[in-house]
Image 1 (cartoon, rainbow, N blue to C red):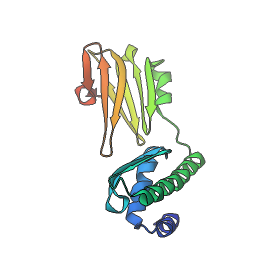
Image 2: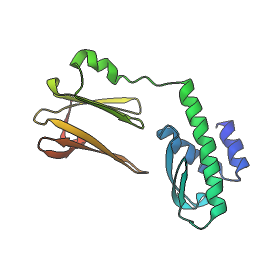
Image 3: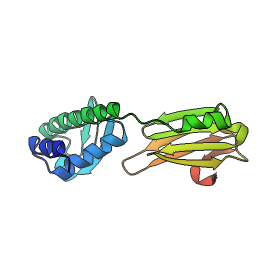
Image 4: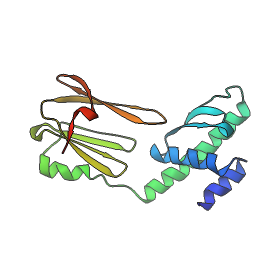
Length: 169
């Protein structure tokens, strides 16, 4: 187990499990925000720089404690990411499929759409998936994220579709 997280848990008088949960959530968003549900943290809540909400909404001391903790953990996450930057493999597909008509990134999700080849590529958590877009022309992508999942909505010339409506290739 990480010694620094144990020390942080002791510093804030919280369980290691609560600190690990926050740290893991912050890793998923590059240290930008975290949603959580833990009794030691006031129940259901969320944090991002400058904003903290917890279920125990009138417990201002707990809010301040969680805000300081999340800020400290976010700095660790960002420092670690700068030390070991991830390289996107989607860029390698530009040479194969040409220039993408749509390309984007949010948190750990990257995507590119190559209409000339009817290919939509998603890279998430170092996992790459390719989909056939035959029969659809993608015009936009939106992402909804909550504590439990990330859902993609794909806007097409035939209306909105989900990723599950495309065929993996």
